Length: 286
Image 1: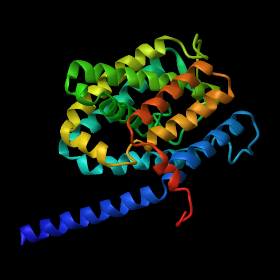
Image 2: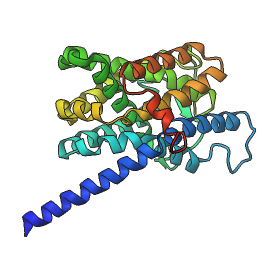
Image 3: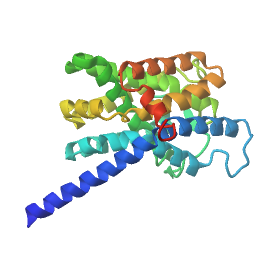
């Protein structure tokens, strides 16, 4: 009886997984291209006072857009998320809240900063409750891209982990200047498009913790097999590059936009982000 129930449960999970994957595949262009471009326009319009009050920096729209753009990553990783992964990602979530709360209250390790808008409900009135939705996927994207780009060299922890940490810091070289430009948060001072260099020391610390936990969370061979076989698993990184890269371009943050371009090259180097995404935007039969 128990074995039959287990088989039924496994079939149900497999069926749900297939349905989710089909949903993402059939809507790749909308998720990975349309949503970030609309998001970029909306955020810039909010920052420039071109949207009416109910729409400007609307937290529900921001959270909904973020969840949609994260969906390929989540659906892609689901088959590889077991108890160990849940435990490690749970620790990373707790760490994310803790280090951000310390940062807001003390200015360490990122430098003195404050949120200018509410990104949804705020924990203790200081930190967005949805913070892990914004941070954890960035670490996962950096780690997965590292595995694909390094290939066999990713077998060495001395190569894999520092490279993934560097990728996390590079992601913030794109994110923070754009976020400051559209008014998500502000620093007391900053040499890099309004962002202080201390912020990247903070991201080095957080990136190290995040990459170490992600590295522990998964069976690397099984994860790499999944990343290679799942065509859409890095679409969230595509969304990131389009959203924040576009904002950096429009605000003249040229160096930050250039780093976004490097991530584009990394995505193309994986050999999986090609015309397949564009084909999903064409009508059937084209």
